[in-house]
Structures are given as C-alpha cells and as structure tokens.
Amino acid sequence: MSNLADIILNETRQIIENKAEVCPEITVESEFLVDLPMDSLDLATLIVTLELTTGIDPFRDGFKTFHSIAELIALYEGAAV
Image (cartoon, rainbow, N blue to C red; front, top):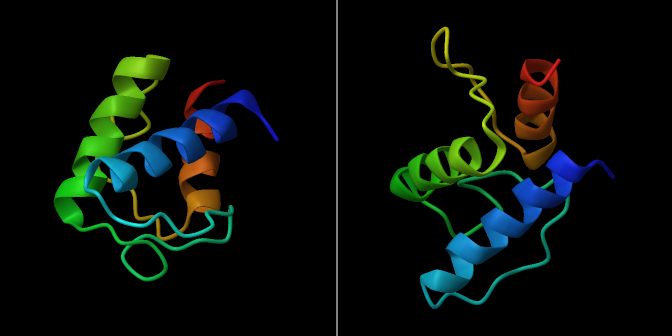
C-alpha cells in the first residue's frame, strides 16, 4: 500500500475515533457514508486534513466524485504526479 493510502486510512480512522464512534474495519473497499460512520462534515474535515498533511489538492480544479477509500486514494495519487 502506498504512503498516501496509509495517510488516508489513518486520517479516516482518526476522524471516526474522535467522534467517539466505534471504528469498523476500514479497507480500501470501504465506502464513505455507507460503511463508515461519517457524515458530510466528516468528509470535509478529512479533505482539509489531507490537504494540510500531504500538500496535495486533487480538488483544485473543482469537485470530483468519490465514494470509497480506493477512489479517494486514486484521486490523491493522480494529483501527486
């Protein structure tokens, strides 16, 4: 797994745990808003945290749709090149 993937998984887990939620197993197949106890504010927090942590902004040219951890990883990896 890439360093970006590890960062995304860890930050997602941290946001869930900070809400005092029981964190389910998170895999790259996990879908936001379906498999994970996250809402839209949590997703916004995740995106801001990832930009601050990685210096990468895959949404610089506008919003891109993503549903799963894997799709978010792909967005960040694509923007990192």
